[in-house]
Length: 146
Image 1 (cartoon, rainbow, N blue to C red):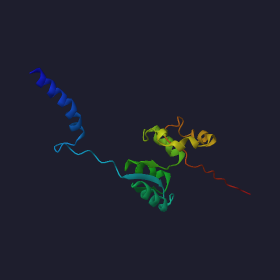
Image 2: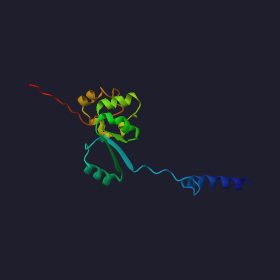
Image 3: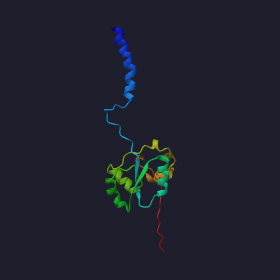
Image 4: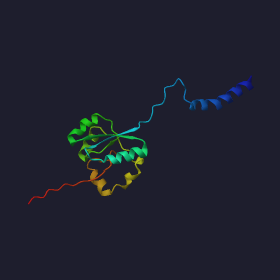
């Protein structure tokens, strides 16, 4: 009898892990990974040819939403969630303050270390911890009066 119990135990140790890896016909199928990236940026800011290249390379579709002015950003964010936001610095600070952004995992973006220290220092006025956003570009507007 002990021999039979030992054989059953050994079989269970061999078979159960294999069965656990197989999908049961009665189980709910696992959720599929999303095949779409939602992007919010200023109207006509990004080149749609870049989207086509990204889609061909990754297999992910781009869902591009745009805003005409920074005042429209809060209402657009309520339509979210978005995977990528390209918004002005003051809006970044506002969204951090109201808890509208989640922390950014820089380990998943290896080029984030290539942001110039000068630009990162300027951007820290909006994201003091540097853990919610990355600066994409910096623009200065000057007015000349004579």
